[in-house]
Amino acid sequence: MSALLSISGVSKRFRGLVAVDRASFEVARGDIFAVIGPNGAGKTTLFNMIAGALKPDDGTIAFQGERIDGLRPDEICRRGIARTFQIVRPFPALTVEDNIMVGALLRTSNPAHARATAHDVMRQLDLFDKRARVAKSLTLPDRKRLEVARALATAPQLLLLDEVMAGLRPTETDRIVAILRELNAQGLTILLIEHVMRAVMALATQVLVLHHGAPIALGSPADVVREPAVISSYLGAEAI
Amino acid sequence: MSRLLEGVPKRSIVLIVALLAGLLIAPRFANDYLLTILILILYFAYAGQAWNIMMGFAGQLSLGHAIYVGLGGYTAAALYVHYGVGPWIGLLAAIPVAMACGAIIGFLAFRFGVAGVYFAILTIAFAEFARIGFDHLRFVGGSAGFFLPVAQYTTNDLWNLRGKPIMFYYVILALTVAAFLLCHLLLRSRMGYFWLAIREDEEAARALGIDTFRYKMFAVVISAGMTAVAGVFFAFYYNNLFPEQVFHISRSIELILAPIIGGIGTLFGPILGAFVLTGLSEGVTELMHALGFDWPGAKQVFYGICLLIVVMALPDGIWPWVARRLGLERRS
Image 1: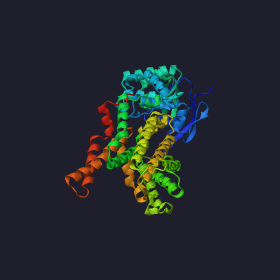
Image 2 (image 1 turned 30 degrees about the vertical axis):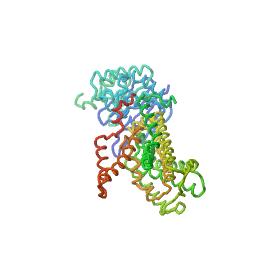
Image 3 (image 1 turned 180 degrees about the vertical axis):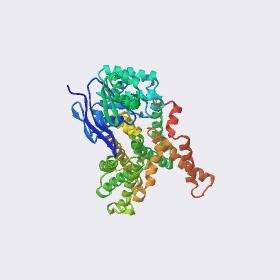
Image 4 (image 1 turned 45 degrees about the horizontal axis):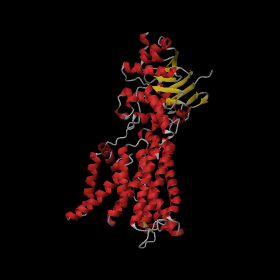
């Protein structure tokens, strides 16, 4: 069985700094795949290469068996990979509904159909009551969910989430965790970068740990947190 | 028709119908002077609507829109003077010429990532190239100007756009209405949503699968084509074209004031802005005259102060404020 997303030998250097160092892993259909690691571990760089915002220097990225490295972000989205941004980027002057409609219009040229899709997505993400509000008036938790909603409206196979829980209170985190679980149950594959371990432990089926751009552990959440290499990279070698 | 009215608040329809009715019967009550003013207002409303597609919808600041006015005007005028081709057929050449020019500017800018103020400078540069180029283009009179045959017309020849101001008034009114409807439909189409997304955050738009290059190209090409129509009108209404005037940057600035004052990105903004600006300008002239002020520059200073007050008090333009007052906020 071929993986939905396969990364092989992907590297990215910024001048002297090796941000991602020969990373290889596979994300199977139906996974909730978490990428964790300390600040500067290369998580966001890896993420941006999958989403097309950056081109890898080496290695290949394949989605559904086809190479996607080097494609533009819009081409990658059209193939079925949607992303969120770590620092949320809603369209500030547009309403919640219009924000999501922009995403939905990727799959239909009919605004009425896109509106119907937007309504479904808004109900799923608890945004329906706020559909007429302009995005810039929303609170951070609402904006985070809008970010997810807009990406979902593009009907992706794979959803890339860049720290959607960061800055949220535990109740809000649990709310998003529940939503993501439900989406996953409906067949969506999710790759997330996360700092909030509470969410990772609750959600992920697979966890990849990056350190200085290189994968140091891969496995189930419970296994990964017991790995000495992971503990030392997070807490320092003395902690062991 | 149903698509046209979909989601439009009832009060907006009432307002549009009342405004249109007023403009349709206005010539009955207007003298020639007032009619000239109204033509000027509608001209700026139309051209402002065209510019608004680029800036208000797609977020691309063009400060060289005079180039499309000029290309449209010169193309149709040259066809008329040299080959006897009427302005309506001339449009079929004027629009593609301006669109091609817009496509060249757009391609150079969007392909090579020229954005924001740098894009604005590029548009100015092209308008300046055109101004200097046409100064040396003998075929259309060079810097000495290009003239359409003028005579006292007793009848209105709509086919050749030769006639009295009232004919020009209804022509520009029809164009303004058409531009309004076109922009309304564009804004509600898939392309309209994509434009707004690009305006708000281009990178986020790209992440949602929007080919931003393609949609920015559509914006510049459509806007250029529409502006060329204003140019054809300009040429046949004024009967003369001078490169120094037509392509001058002050012309480009003049075109964008109405939508800025009225409200960038709104459909009513360019129309309201044109009324306020031209009304204010002519009103100030009248007022200064009545008060006996004849200091040179006094009018411009007063006009400038009025604009400053509007921009400072209503930075989003007048229309959003009026719309709130009238309860015309978009419901979705």
